[in-house]
Image (cartoon, rainbow, N blue to C red; front, side, top):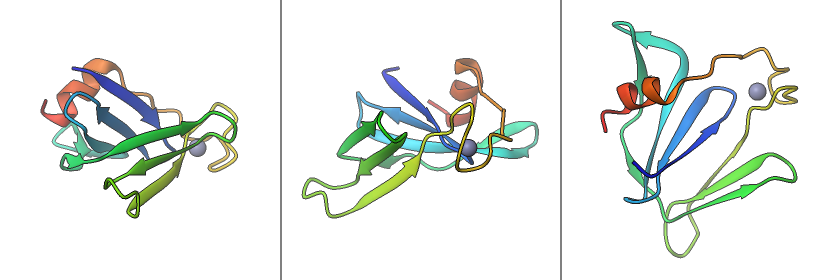
Length: 98
Ligand SMILES: [Zn+2]
């Protein structure tokens, strides 16, 4: 699996760069002892901005449909750094039904 994993405050974003699709694993929510993930969605491009910890997901080729989010960091300015849950690769594989 060719993946890029990004942590935002409320979810773990999983980008399957080989198949150009992504999903999110929601933090703090479990169903039947499994993490809850969204359906896979196609995307066109992913841009990570190391300067301000933001990233942009382009959903279409003309780049008119975008999702912007923040990366969750150790001293996170978005949530105050309270969320500490980090999923292992194993957890992620389990959650996203690869
Ligand atoms: Zn945060």
